[in-house]
Length: 422
Image (cartoon, rainbow, N blue to C red; front, side, top):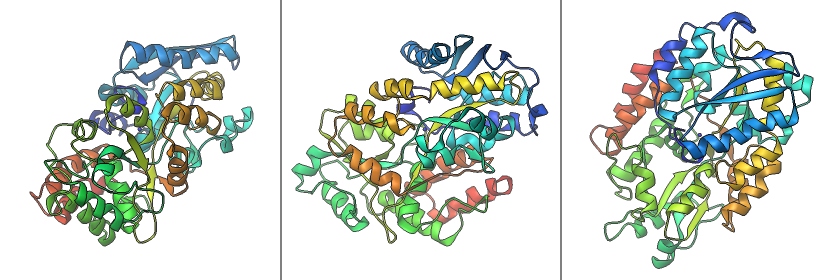
């Protein structure tokens, strides 16, 4: 689910992109202007993606080059923009009908851009792409109105990262699949001592939604509409906010610091953090303690979490959709995804590339935990105004966690301000 590689993606806002797309109905229906040219087997294509720097550019260019390796007449030119600026730029391009053929797309933002992108179902059938070769939650997460809009390269259910050394020192057993909220709360309280906390939180959409889902089963949308004032969602969010405001097992959340949660955990100041597998190998390189992972603790109906991820789609303005789709098939094939997995840049969406990621992670329990979490995961389906929702959640959610306003008031404010546009 970045301005840096996928492993470090942040769920930040890009309100300009959504505003730019409000005028997009169907973007001309398919094959207007654009940066792709040629036939199904011969085309010069441009791919717009989020790039974190020179090393990132080189790594992703190798993914693009796979298309030319597989199809000698097809070339893919990578154009990079940092994560923070990517969404406003791609929104403007898609709305103008002049977007590049291949578009990087994140599942949480898909609803805002889907109208300007080409449904891929017919191309998938034509060229024999097998959906069963990919993790189902993220394939579903990259659909809009039942149509596949992007093919994923990475995915992952939200899981708990934890400090094994702190758990051992406190005499707390390592969490395993099946551990409960009672187990979690007991561990977090015991680990909160000496200026350190058992957990670190943030008001980010994916984290909040995952905790609420496991606590009460509630989801942020119902029948496609924002549902934050539903009593079950309010109950779940209140329990989550209480981790900070009353239970004191997590520190207060500073506003305007998107790196706080990760820094707090990697520095050893908090013993647990909810995160995605895309961040695991990067986190391994930052910590000075033994890192473990566990599923999100089970609520009344078991351990429930959300999956997010990213992939590649085709703009409706692309002149060579067949060539673009063949390029995407190459870019999401086993070889490049195995390379990305080995380098820690992505937890691959293609199941055949999973072993490379587990080998790179070097955490014995990783496969059991990720498999378990995936089985108990669904994609986080979002609304067309989700950028606004997440921006409001970051603002008012921070106040709720810090005890400045009641959790139910925070959710009502978000619902009132964003609900009409959901």
